[in-house]
Length: 146
Image (tube, rainbow, N blue to C red; front, side, top):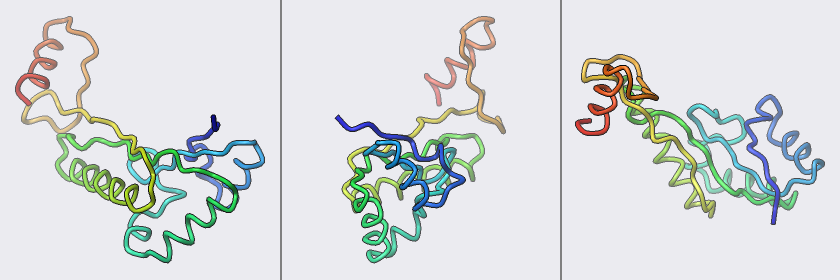
């Protein structure tokens, strides 16, 4: 078994400093944020997608410290009622899956997202109970109609 870390915990560190810090802690696997809510402090998604040399350089830094990338993460909201936000979230997810394939990363973590409360919503709405009735109406609309 390899113990790992979600590298966004060390977003204030450069890639090299983060890798050294995590290695010194005895960890050998990492989940790396590629965008969305976890950010992309240690993975410049677009840059890595377009350059094989950048991918090789990136993987060399990771593998030279005997690390495995256990997953990429791009938690965001691809079904947000804010259409521009939804599209950015979807695009980041698609790019992350493409990069995972290119770099032999076996897992991509994400959020399913949440819609608004109706077709005219401007903000996501996540009812966590079916009472009072207004919440059950929203929940039913989200799952049955949207």
